[in-house]
Image (cartoon, rainbow, N blue to C red):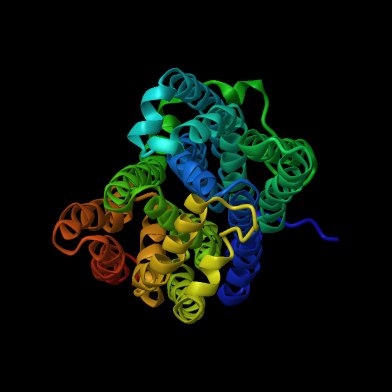
Length: 458
């Protein structure tokens, strides 16, 4: 098989190239999303619905630390894509070395802080009442594996920047398959409960790290770094930081959203209402996997061609990515509108030995999830404009507009809405906030993107 090089990003037809980049990314995200989905189904059926709520409480903390690796990865990958497009391989190598050093320093520090403040963080994120103990068990074990996850997320972005989507896809599949296999062994066979769920996830992270480590040591990677590349360079760190901060800010806001949502919903309906949001959260990760896949596939194409000053190809990649993403988003919308009850029932146990409290919780979840799901995903067909628009500015190295557009949905619109609407509309106000924020952020991003195309790419 001929060796794949990054040069193809600037040569192949955009439509074909986007499919080649987006399909592996979509498959990888699908498997990771299925992992979260099936993991939740296993936990819900084998441990209980409170266990799903406990995991949902832990996610924002562990995801934020892992997002540090993703932020460093995406920020550095934008530099690498443009450097490869401009044939500046030295800068690409130095950037990659700095990414590794920075990821290790930051994530290990954050894990230490996360373990030290464990008893304060869990209640703050909604881990109250019967949720606290299982959440603490899961949280403590998960944090040990988060540095490996951060390195995987960083490495995955760099693999994609090299134009190697198939290897990036495999890196995303490995932890998911490993986690599900370990779920069966640790939870079902060994009956380890929450500890089993946590160790299964941690083992998956480790397997992913080993694969990414192998990739960069093998002949498949163009980035062969040495010790000199690990020394931190201020100018590169500044550029990684400005671009990576976009991703980090998005995840930080996501963690704040989880914090607010878990507490608001707990006050509205207790642990059962948090369980409803846990199911909605899983579907937000899972259902939109093809849209996120198109976005991930678009990033290296736009970045490489912008660095190579091929602006017609950049513009074509924007329009093609929006078209593809909008199509798959509409298909997702149709499925979720038709089958919300059937989807919710997958997460709930029907074991005959369920207690009266567990049965009552399951009934509550089944009654409240369908309407919530329809409202949350009501604006799904139009979100492609917002996602691709924000990704474009990040791909070409324009950190400020990328940051502002990334924060429009959750930061500027969604958080104010969930702080206000539930006071007047209760539970409905929470779910309605999602689609209103989607519409407003899409309009704003569309205006910025149209202006950019006319002024910079024409």
